Length: 249
Length: 249
DNA sequence: AATTATTTTGCGGTTTTATGCAGGAAATTG
DNA sequence: CAATTTCCTGCATAAAACCGCAAAATAATT
Image (cartoon, rainbow over all chains, first blue to last red; front, side):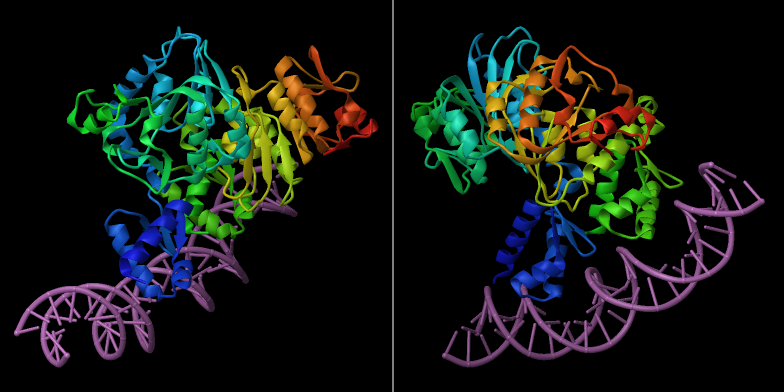
């Protein structure tokens, strides 16, 4: 097993479980404690994790999920949110995923809007339920803890019964070849169902995520009607998507 | 369990409850008193909390004026929560309502418990989802905004499909004649369904609510198996309930 | 291809850290 | 003020971290 390989496995484990024990790792990969210790040291030096006596902790353990980075992209998300809310009309049924961009949208809803929001995300539903007039429907199922999201066959079955006007997806990766992709199996299943249950699919993404891809495909690009980023609609980066017939806002 | 992990758990608990007892912590995490004491000492040195004889207080206790009022009934709810969690065994399926007493119970769950919690309450589900091992299932439906609760026929239908080991209800009123009653139609419908879907129904209530009633009946008293209050089980106030054959804890 | 340089790894011995335990001091409670 | 609980100090122990070195694996060079 290569050093790089080992370290990426360690990172994977640490981000998955929020912690790792040196002893576990050395047993799992059949290398000496010293090797693991040196790996953790190196990763810690590069700011990939936090080393502690006996093992290591993920960064999110201290700063909360990537605190500083989020504050940085807050403005961008705000711009996206403003563009998104302008698409929502009174009386509409709106299906949404979770994620920080969607939360920003939920906060940007005009107080006099009368619409119905449907979501699997605990955080999003919480936010929607602060709204004075909008109705909110929570889709239930087993909660996927990392993302605070109902995921499972029950949830998917419920979504399938719907046909909403709009579907807003906060996305992790989009790419003209691979379409939308993500790294969480459960989330992908739910998003797939949401896409099928809406007249119009709108993707929200900060420009950093444009032209990247992740292991699991959500859908190919022709299922998407609209793409919202913080950039100007005629930005060069968005050219491939305009050419593919997507409305870029 | 890593030292930092433990300390972060302590901090979490302190900020949640505004206070912690060393004895509770050492029991919950199965380490010696000394370890906890040293942790508290260290955290106190770093200004993360305020150490006092027997435990620690959150900083907001001194800084923020908010705390002291809550502390009074907090203690009662904490006692109730402790009694309630002791009824939960590994592997059980537990149906719960929402409300502050239930939230307190969710926070008091021992970290090593493995159980499945099912609820309609957004707040409760949020709290359960912080637990490292327990599974959490959200029942979905239209959100009743005032109480942040899924309520409606869909939710009731889902609950009807279950047969759980335990049902914990946080209740607003109980009375030997009228049984349990409440003042929110939607909440009552859901609670009714929950009662029918559990082997054992446990009511949690602070003593102030004993012998009071509200407009809408949830169920009559013989549906209840156990009543938990902050009082001693042989308190005079609870006599009528003991006589009615309810296990009073 | 052979050899040299560089990196990576494992091992023995030492130091540090984390934790529990025992006994006495201090604090809290009734 | 007596009894119980909690706190502190020092000590013991086991685990983890560290250090230096040599073997092994990899990469680079001739």
